[in-house]
Amino acid sequence: MMVFSLYTVGLLGAVIAFILNNNFKLGIVVGSALPSLIFALAVVLLEKYLSIRFVEEAPVIFYGAAFIGMASHKILSSYFLIGMAGLLFTFIYLHTSPYFEGFGGALGTTAALCFLPVWATSLLKKK
Image (cartoon, rainbow, N blue to C red; front, side):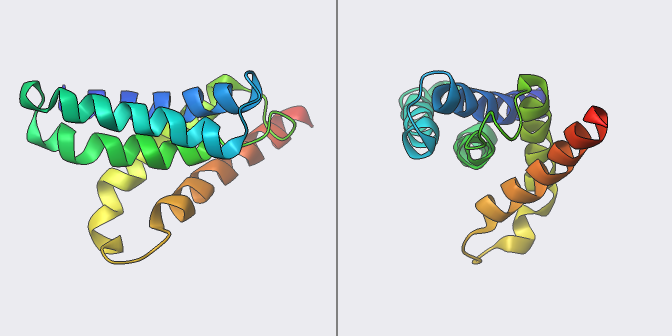
């Protein structure tokens, strides 16, 4: 159940940031930072009701997946594919984060690496 909720966080982080960036025209920075801040504050406020793993992992997953939502709808306009990239980000983060300990830019790099295959899939689908 815990892993399912972390994947949901990754999916929502990417899609919410994408919607705020593209549909509400908040821009890439506010579109990803604002929901990340709100989510992190909610986790802090509800900390005593949540598992330790969720409190430690979920804000980082949401923030990293929100980088995917920085994509322009001109490049990729599918909410489904943005969500898939968020799920892929969560999978990679959960299985590789110990290896990136102490490296700067790991979340953004991971988000970019998760966006690229999804974007390539959309390009292949168009042809």
